[in-house]
Image (cartoon, rainbow, N blue to C red; front, side, top):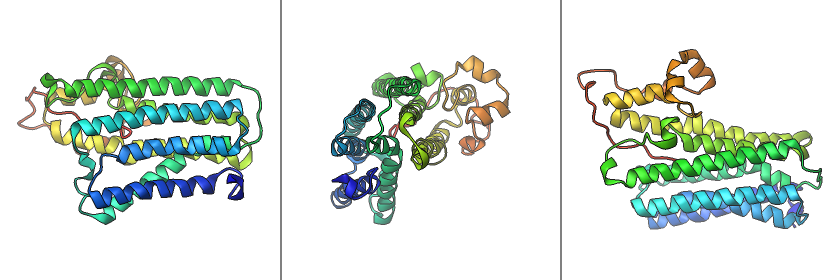
Length: 307
């Protein structure tokens, strides 16, 4: 059935993704209800993984494992984000979009592109007939996924617990994994999707290697577009004149977890080139001024979109 469109389900998954995201766009636009946005993204990954696995029908061990990993990640993240937004009551990302249909449409189009592109490794693997035995790349990829999803889930829960505590009202989260990375949830998400790609490599041939665009797209998205830059901007505007926050930002890795004592001692070029401490992450950080001596913390930047 799926092979009528193409042997790797690329057209089929694109059609399904556009249709699924269009449905939720209509709901959001008509009802002004944006609490299902992240749920729509996460569950779309599940639909693509299960759909391609079932349509192919070969049920190779590698296909089943990768599909299971994607479904597990999607269920965990989707339910977490849905319950969180229901608890918080609103998604501030849509404050400027609710009355602007054009901006809202662009967001949903981009979400559809995100889902389809990042899903490429599992989509293509599920459409391949080759079934070599389990190799080292499979195991390495599964380990990467396990570490990544553990990081993401732990960071999400730590931040939610921190923000729900009354004594932490008006503070940024710097506990647990957030003490060794300013965005540990994004580190986990990037790592787990690179793990999915690595575990897909034993069956890839020729142009199928283009599925690497999936984790590359996700990494670039979180590093340069809708992930870290937006959260850094938000946090800098809120706490940029708070001395303790500036120390936290200066001594904490933006993505890759490192002890603050280690990160602090590294040269600036090393941080920029290898640890993604890009200058534009601090372009909204106010210059030290008369308020520099403030020591009180302010509120936290939101976690994953994902986070």
